[in-house]
Length: 402
Ligand SMILES: [Zn+2]
Image (cartoon, rainbow, N blue to C red; front, side, top):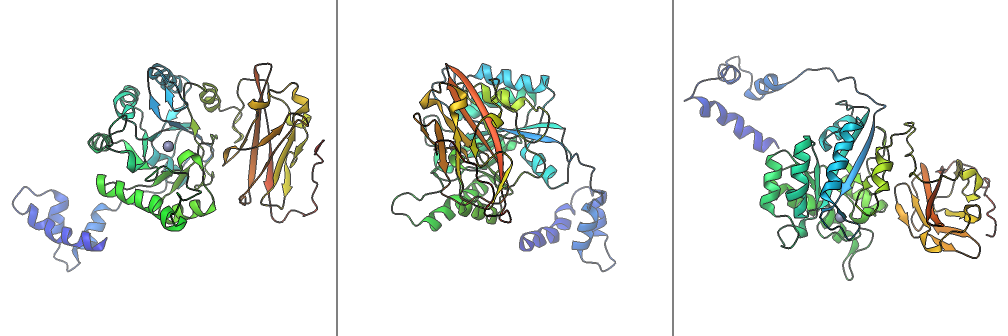
């Protein structure tokens, strides 16, 4: 750092010697008091502003989009008209779109953001982010972030080009890392050493984007939203200030930097956007879909609602008997910070269960269960807290049929 600054400072007075002197630069040259120029520069640029009063109670939602297409046929695509309507709705609902850098500045206590704020991110690096989404976002004057995985740049087909990314960068679009290869970061590809491979995906992608575009990369999005402790730790060590999953949440200022949630929005699941823009009662837990909510008290779960457990690899179970005739293939379990987990559902016992294969960090987790009953989607949620100091013989819910 110093090495690059010092020659610049020494050269600066020479560069301006032949042109009209600005007052700042004149001061630099006229510095005959024996102080080194470095001090003068620091003085001239220092801004002794007191830290701003920031709104610590603001809530932020982060959107994750992928492709913008007229004929959406998969869970990555959204109709441009639908996207535009969503952008319009944010304005109508009084939800302010803030840029990634402002979001992070707020988290550091340096800048305030409106009470209901949204960050827009677009993953992978599809050209439609440039050709379709960008013009729409410009209409609204919304900042946004492109999460790029570098292997997918300039490869033809639907991929974005480096030249397009340069244009976006020049216009102030935020560009961040989404790895090199877009593999699930929990497992190395066959035959590769996990640590070395992971290091390259996390550090290497940051370096490529920084070198190619001359920018500073501060955010990282996990491919598929999947991660583990090793991944999170290494990414924080790489200097990322924010790591993003695809588990949408209304986030407060204290949301963990290594697992920030995003709502993945596409045409096939319009409920996700509705859920996101419903800031509800601001209690930090996102309100449910517009479907009948089942009181979790009516359902036997393990751990129980609001239970504190000392175990870091709990088995999560719930008996769905109270839901009625559940369509077996429609049962889905989500866990905050993990997203959709491969829970097993047994139609005979009506039990759904999932055993964690990785250790949970001590904190509160929300479990969201959804299932279709007679074509209608029902959802319920409850939370539990992993707390190593909780009594080991703590109440373990007896799940019927377990
Ligand atoms: Zn992706």
